[in-house]
Length: 119
Image (cartoon, rainbow, N blue to C red; front, side, top):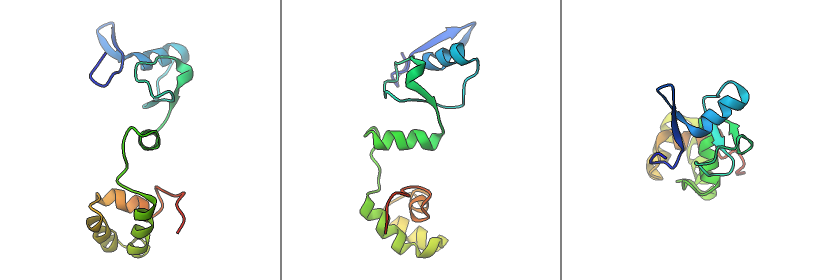
């Protein structure tokens, strides 16, 4: 077990996360990122795993309460109003106002994230 709670093992002097090795044995290749649908990093059941992107993984973490989002629906609405149609300077000012990283504000303001929030 590593510090993040993932099972680890060694095969022919190569280190492997146990869930990635289970996927490899089952499917023959391993995607860049595997997500635990069960939220249990120790789990190696391939039926509990699914390929995904870093963005998918971040959405999982936020929606499942593993990582709190700095955004709320109200902040997203205010960001969109303040961002003036996606202009760089307006988004940067809104990010500073809400103490957000620029890319967080940009994603919400331009609907690349939080797309489910209406005006």
